Image (tube, rainbow, N blue to C red; front, side, top):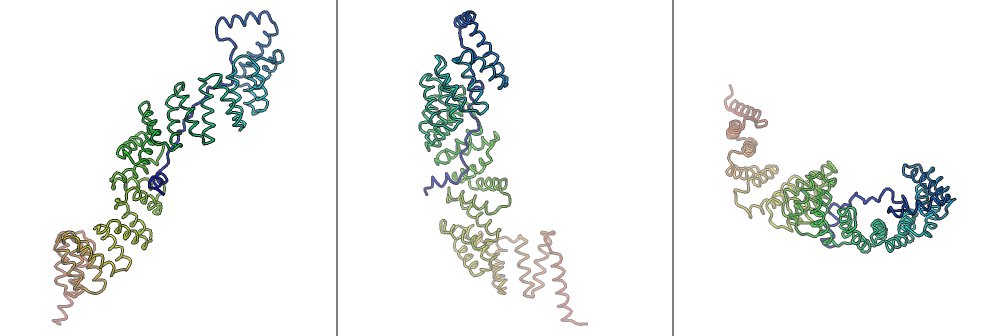
Length: 474
């Protein structure tokens, strides 16, 4: 698998907009037959002369009023009375189809629309309504044909183009759907939403460059958290302009993006950009929000940071630390050794490895790692190494060697209480209580609150008294 595909699979997903283009609420209705004063006057005179036409129109108008306020059964009754007088009444046929569709009687609705197609006006509307009906009936082939007929009769029929595009999306014909949306863009009632849908379709077509361009144009018109997030996603997946992607994610979070995964992608982008501390902090924050106390998930998330940038040593070390905390000692040590293969002689990794080896009882390996560290760095940087070596030799009963290393550590930082305490303890174990007391009192003077220091002083003083009494019995 290529790195590009690995990144795409690993980062949080591209999100599709929840905003949809709503079709007009009265799209299935025909209000009236005349659109100009002259036409209305002509129709009025015709109906005035023809009583049957007047009655049919009266029933239609009553049906339409009932339809508008949601009284579907009443509307259908009046439409039927209209059609009994005038079986070819286009508006009644069209609206009757809409009413039947509302009651899920799709077959009847289709019959009425097919009858309406014999009329002489509004044919584009009927084909459009037929397309909606067939789509609701899951007859996509017929719906496509109906929408295409509507567009052929009325090339700027936005809603027919839109519905045709969405059927093509359902069929995974993204290129054809894109062509439809490009055609619809100049006549869209909401160009921003159309542009957003185009960006999403370019994403589905894996044309990330064009999707990026669409989001940039969109952000110039309307800055939304969704667009900011998705543009950053596209930049990350293309491994370009990562600094910009980070800025976009910060801005998206300030705008309260609904996607908490923005924090995950921010951590990934920061790792790609070499901002390792920030990437760790953000990934830990994300994991705590989504799967608190789940160390295995945290390890999985840290691995993504390493995958996008193998130089993220901090993430690799955190993987090892998390595994060690969770009781996976061998895996933790293996992780550190793999890291040392990628980055030989890394001081912090070697120090952590020596500590893990010591804590798992692999003292000889820990000593070997410590000696390798001593070859690489000057004495002033080896304080913690000397301290660990003294603990190892002390645990093996070799107090002389242990004391030599702890003395080297004290020479580096004479004021550190831990070192003086350890050295004093070794002295006491060897029976040199007077020297041990000297170091314990030094700690008490410089760090009065040091744990157990007063009890240690009393214990050593008691040993000295017993020793003195043993030499000079009364």
